[in-house]
Image (cartoon, rainbow, N blue to C red; front, side, top):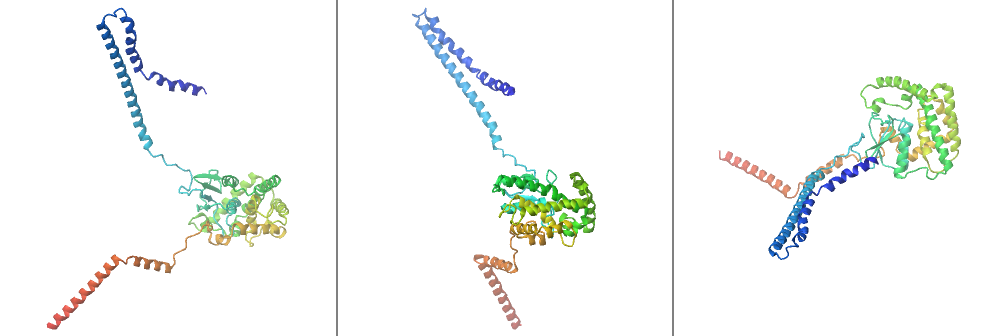
Length: 419
């Protein structure tokens, strides 16, 4: 506030002191005003009166000239200021720079950065699968970016999205931001109590059951590669042989995973204890779902999206790989298997195409490949386009060449006969 008060006099001072010509005009007018008092004794002197009147008129003329000069000076200053401001206005504003990977983005298209596809599962990350499932369920336009898992968000995470030149990271924040922006709240029909139950259950899934699955993956990295049929050469976009990539994956993934698990707290327990934790979580989910198609009725909510993304990591593991927690869910929680199948059919009708072709954007219509018949038809159309004046001209030239050749052959024959 002190700075604002200090700036006001500094800005107003030039406006007060600027018109320096005004005192001069006042001085020119003062003699004219005082002349009647001085000329009072000499009323009978007409010559002096005329001189006084002339001086008065001269003073008025001088003041008028000064005023005109001041006006001209002000107009000149205004013209110079306008001329100085004109180039600034004519200059184009600098192009806006976006701190994103996808610089040639389309407006309102959501660009999703996630893991590469596998032959059994669209994504090995439950968080990535959660975001893509939600996007499909609410019907928002999105495109997966094939970055070969090279990029991470500013927070160092996958998944993240880019929308209109801005980055949004973390699966929960992504869904929250997009729900608010596009008014796509899957939980709008829930009661306050149901929302609380949903929140607590999602916390159990993401902060407990997921880490139990990660524990198994960190302990058996080779089973992860075989159980999901992961091709690291394709997933990472590298030319190194898979044998070398698999070797480094087993070492680095196992070491980093073990550190993260201990930091989380789940890693300090024995394998048997962690398995029991997982079974307890599955039992709670199974009892919550009961005989309903989805957790809160006939329509899926955010809880259904998260549960599907996590339980798919268990259900779609190859049956050739032994995993007690997967077997427990299959045998003791068949309603959870049914839930996964319903969510898959609802959100991923192209699941088989995704996993077979490892296509990140199977949901986007592809242009139909041009057939052989279509190419021939296109060539025929081009030849037909050449018809008309130019085509007639070419035909006439060809006929002329043929007639000239015919005449030359006939002349040659006549010469031979004369010989």
